[in-house]
Length: 166
Image: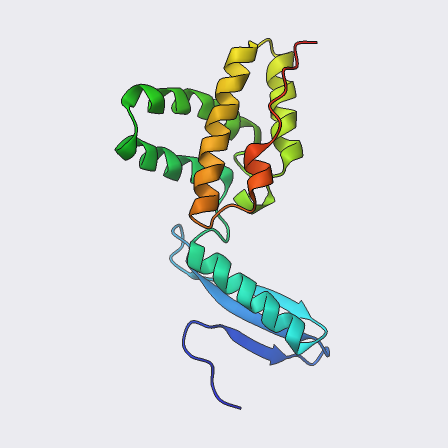
């Protein structure tokens, strides 16, 4: 069997009978060591499709990007293209977003997370206008993530902004 080109990853059959795929996700900035990602499956075809998905996540740079990391990246992008007053509003709204689920990987964010944030903000006494502003910031950020191939789907980006004053 021919060797795979550099950077495409490795597929092997282990002694446990499972097929294993490994690929590199760059280096860890804290330690400088290479990040290796692993997947396993019963068949070679399944593990090949998993390897392809891991390579695509690595190429888009979002394999392990958290929502907080993405929001910081997006704010840097917005700084260059939007008016300072708009970016200031986004930065204010970022406190709620990052505080609630900044630790989540961007591809794991669900509509339920966002709706839970809206409910939590309403319970804390924020006005409907403030919640709408947070919704605007989330939508703009996640739509940009989808355009750049970082986000999962538009359904999460759109979400339902709840007017939870009742």
